[in-house]
Image (cartoon, rainbow, N blue to C red; front, side, top):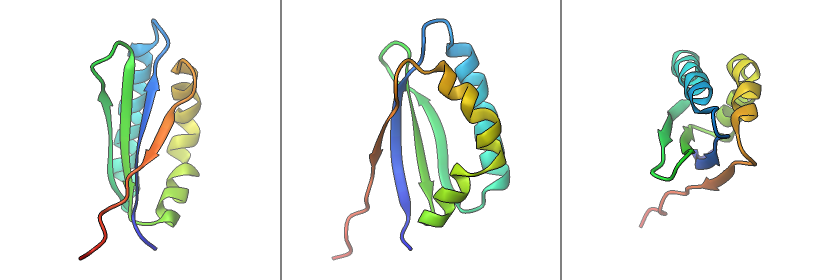
Length: 99
């Protein structure tokens, strides 16, 4: 299967930014240490107040599913979601087709 890449944008509740950043850093460390088919995984602070994004890229749909069902996400995901003000928005990024 082909690579799966997306950016997710989110707003964090006022007063929860420190918790959010701490949890995201922990999750990123665990993903980098234990998910070899995760090609790229990094959180970013956006320039608007309390706005963040994560870019995730997986070698395949199966690798994304493994990430979504990982122990690290099960452990840290609920705390991250609790920090969010509303839903996150995911945008898929597809590579250009070969000429």
